Amino acid sequence: MSSSVNSTVSIPAIIDSPLVDKAFLLLETISEESFWVNLLGERLLKILKRYFGSDVVFLGIIVYMAPIIGVYFNNLLLVCTVWFRERFYVTLQVKDSEDIFEGIQEYVATKAKEIKHLRSMEARDKPEEENIELQGPSPPPKIDLYPLVDTEQVIWYKGYKFWVSFRKDISKSKYAHHYGNNLGDLLNMVSQTPVVHVTMRSSNIKLLRQFLQEWVTLHHEKKHGKLLIYKCVHTRYEGEEWRQVGSKELRSFDSVILKPGQKEVLLADIQRFRRREKWYSQRGIPYRRGYLLYGPPGTGKTSFVQSIASKINMNVAIISLSGSLTDDSFSYLVSETPRNSILVIEDIDHCHISDVSDGDSSAPDSGGKGKITMSGLLNALDGVTAQEGSMVFMTCNSIEALQPALLRPGRIDMKMELGYANKKQIEDMFWRFMDLDIDADMSEKEKKIRSDKLDKVVVKFVDMIPDEKVTPAELQNFFIMNMDGYEENNGYEYIIEKIPELLESIERDRQQARDHKNRAKNVVQGTEPVEPVKPVEPVKAVEPIESTKPVEAEDSMDTDSLIPPTPPSDPEDAIGST
Ligand SMILES: Nc1ncnc2c1ncn2[C@@H]1O[C@H](COP(=O)(O)OP(=O)(O)OP(=O)(O)O)[C@@H](O)[C@H]1O
Image (cartoon, rainbow, N blue to C red; front, side, top):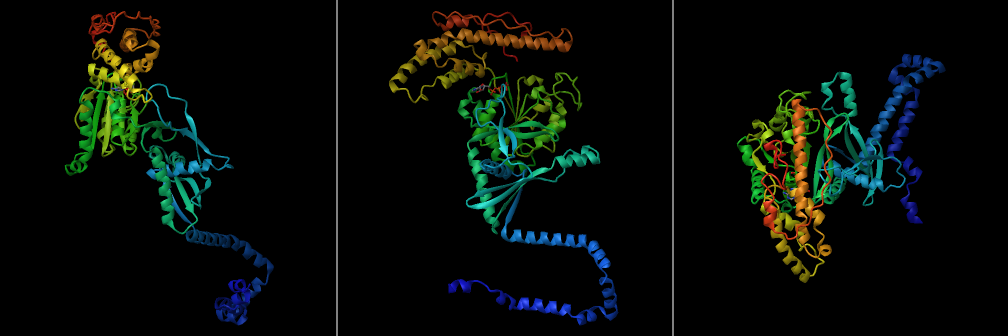
């Protein structure tokens, strides 16, 4: 009981304190008339008394002074709040241009999703987690939820309370100067960049920093071991922007099967380049390296870049020139390539070869598809906007369609053809899919039996698939469809029996490609009206061959065709050209 009395401070004790005593003395002094006479003089005091004695004048003064007093009062309140917050709260602001922004945003979004009573959130496209294919139709987009801009989220972490708000920071739009003042201002308003404010009840800013670091690290670890894929997307006000469209498991270097030495040569060049940053800067050489991978579709260009990025711990940022980019937007994208990403420019043979900037759809080879010109492309690649330290991979189907200016060293430092599979690649592809070692459930005895059978089949398989005529993608597709028939067919001979069917279907695809190309050529030259594509003949079932003698199969193939073909209309367009 006595301890509680001692611990509370009584009101008389406060009144007796010297500070309060001084305050009382001041109030007593200013209530004395002699004080005001001394301060203002007797005459002025008399006048003031006369006016302030009138209620009307007093009310007028109050009405006049009220807003001024209000402003001062507000400011005082603000100062007090700031003082209070600074003493008891700490805040950090992060702009969205910082790498850590994403980690903080993801963490807060995850926490906010756990809040039961939350009623409004922003829905965004969810990046695909895995197994996204860079070709073919994309799966339907998925929804992810994020905190709304200009609302405050309250979250808890390690027993601390945090107030997190996402806001728009006022900054100039990069396109505002293109427009008049009013439109420019409007554009600035809509293009404010997002920032996040994180406030914590503590006076220790280092602690807040440590917590934010933990959020960012958590996010990073979640992504660790993934290859991030960025692609450019079109936004309403800002034009083209980079956006992370997915993440994939790292692509192993071994999973890409090229001609002997190709992978090693390119990797060695990249590693040399990465070691020599200082060397480049000492000699004043722009620190960047350009690579060109060319070859028919499905020979592994995209896969190879992904496997390299995985190997050197980088991500990939992909631009396709077959889209509707302009020189300006392309140049912007190049200069804003996401950090730690290899820039991949696909279909480089699809851009105009004209030097006219915009709207030239008459340029040869343009097909009227995009508005980017070769000069725009070159400027973006080696102009001031090109990112220092960048690695650019360009891919194309036909190197002949490229201007020599693009191919010169400094823009493209190494060219590599990824062509149709040779015999060694065919064999490697076979083992990539028929590898029994990865089947953990199989007994050693069973493995031995099967592997002896495979050893015989692989020889026939490699013999029967013509050299440099089939793409690795076509072989991959064949194996995916046929690799699991051992039990059903009582052996692996069925693989050999399926080869004529494979070759026939490939030949049909090639013929279709040739027809398409010829039609496009004739339409450009104006010699043929655009006709609808004729339906392809249904695939005829191929008689399984009695014995799988490789010699007979090879005899039936000429150098330009996989099965006895109808001669191509243009010798140049025979199999192998795309
Ligand atoms: N050399 C290869 N080694 C292993 N797999 C390959 C190879 N080439 C192609 N593939 C497989 O074929 C598919 C398509 O390959 P990819 O997209 O890399 O070809 P591409 O040459 O980039 O084609 P495009 O010119 O149409 O972009 C992928 O699933 C890939 O795994």
